[in-house]
Image (tube, rainbow, N blue to C red; front, side, top):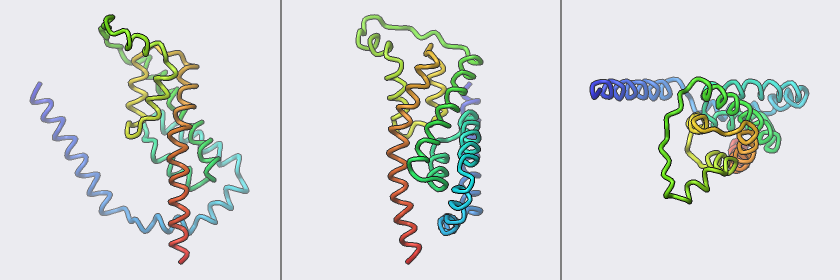
Length: 195
């Protein structure tokens, strides 16, 4: 068993090292500034085909989140492509759809461990009854990947409407803060790039 853990740790380290080397060699951070300068072309196309672009983004981002994608990439992409309010709407809708599908899928294929409940802790028993609040708190917490939260939620018996409502509220708060902060950073970078 210890040998397996060492091999897994070594494999994870090698994968991280190769990923870091790939990012260093093949990713040019000046391309981000080029993307900001080409922003007018992108926004003209999106404004002409708004419904199509929003629909495609929602579908692709839902699929991306379903396959355990990271939430930050979709936030950055949405703020580059759309206005902040539309980016928030699109991100919340697509992340909620992808997360709900992921939770439903994970709850069907995983075996739930028997969690021993300690009935002496009345506080924890009271908290466990507030499913929507628990999901909101999990969605708001920064730094926890969407895939991890989906896996945690799939272990508990939470109704689908509770997952959807909790995800919409939680994603709205956390993504709203990030999107409007990132929008201001984008405006500052574009102002620096213009001179």
